[in-house]
Amino acid sequence: MKLTHKQIAESALFLAIALALSQIKAFQMPQGGSVSLIPIPVIILAARHGFKLGLLSSLILGGILMMISTHRLVNVPQFLLDYPVAYMFLALAGLSEFTSAKKASVITIATCLLRLIPHTAAGMLILYTSSWTAAFWGSFAYNLSHVLPESIVCSIIIYFLYKTDENLLKRQKAA
Image 1 (tube, rainbow, N blue to C red):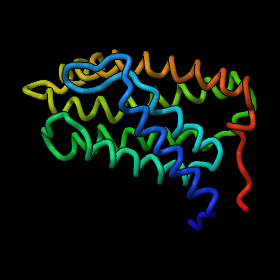
Image 2: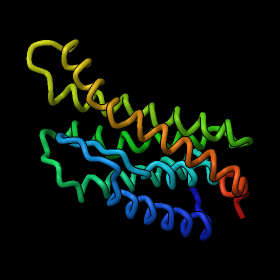
Image 3: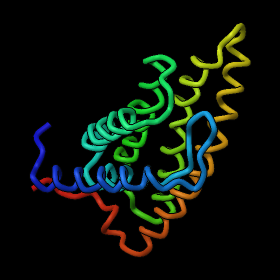
Image 4: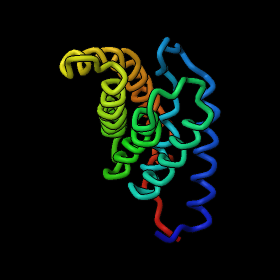
């Protein structure tokens, strides 16, 4: 994948914004997870430059967030699922064109909610004692309690960002 200077600059800018937003949380869950606005810059980047750059950028973001995390490392697969893999799901926003505020909002809530898959899997690795079913439901409920509100808030903000300036979320032509 050959990147233009503009794509590299925008990627760096949106990742810096996401990292700054990672420090502002509406609430923090006791065992990890929070409601923040981190997905917004990643989704904007994926919408503007497509899935591939969104995937690369979200992988980098997840890696950085993993390195600066204050949560204890239970096992390596759990950390990889909770950080790089979970954030890579946001790149799926780059597979679709944001042609209306409603569509942008639906894509945002869908990609944010898809992060439940790796978060739930990571939680299952921590919670498993004798029943995968109990570990699944415990992890799913715990992660839903912060992923759902974050998804809704980000979806509303993306809706209004599109209404304010639809060019912000339009696919950019590679120069």
